[in-house]
Amino acid sequence: MASINGVHRVKQTSTIPSRLYSIDNTPSLSEFKLICSKTLNIDTYPLAHAVQCNIPIYDLSRFSLSDIDTIKTLQDEWYHILLSSPGVFVLKNLMPCSIITSTNAAFDPTIKSEASSGAHRKGDHFSGGTNTRIWNSFSKHCLSDPSSFQQYYSSPWLSLVSAAWLGPGYRITAQANIIRPGGSAQISHRDYHLGFQTAATCAQFPAATHHATQLLTLQGAIAHSDMPPASGPTRFLPFSQAFAQGYVAYRRADFDAFFRVHHVALPLAAGDAVFFNPGLHHAAGANATADVDRAANLLQVSSALGKPMECVDSLPLVERTWDGLRGEYERDGLSAEVKGFCGGCCGWLSVSYEFR
Image: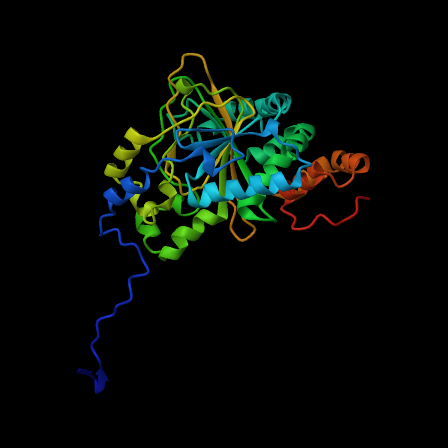
């Protein structure tokens, strides 16, 4: 027993573990390897039509939106994949090619305008400004072409996959990304929220927050061009989101070296999409083609309980799409498309209102 200024203090050894992951303690690469060594059986997810490289693949053309029981089972499977299994899945035929074409056309004026001003170089973390990235493509799409914007974000499948992971009231932010031939690969990483911090900053957040941050965002990419393997579709390390110290470990050279050897990637066709847990170790690949511009709309869908990555001013978007949305409601009622658009565009928890 020690006495300090007349106050007796009992010296004890606590058995309570630290609430923090210390950057001074080397994360276990062997534990990481063990987690990532699993093999997924297709029977685990009976509604998936294939599993390739440990990634379940769903062909949405095989399902009917009116089959409510099957839709609920699909959402259960997607949730389980993101939380407890490989952490990534592919949805074939998420978006009709006609909508992809009209959306690409809507992006063109923004691409040309930002290229002339040099704004396209801002945030190009691939290869020194040779590529194109439209930050807040969500708002810019709407202001450029409200009709195709409404069609795009009215997708019932986009609404269903977002709600499966995040529940109601989610908010969508998006960035269009075009990687030109010769574009280099990314370094493996985790994503928003903690994935955008330094290792030292991440280490200041309690361990529970490292898990919670994965539950607040759904990461996705909708292919706006065909993505053959040589064009460098996103590389993933299935199951890696289950490694508890991943947010302080992914920057380490030994973890990145393991990723470079063991990552997997699947080709996509225009209109396909891939969705994944933001804690999954991933990285865009190098575009080794001579003539393919690899184009995607990158989505960060945020929980109503989290903070979106970008600020979206919804009022101008509502004003630009109101007439079209009202016409659709008068024609089809409170359809899955109308509800999906209202949820995605404005994050409304309820759509029990009247169009006037």
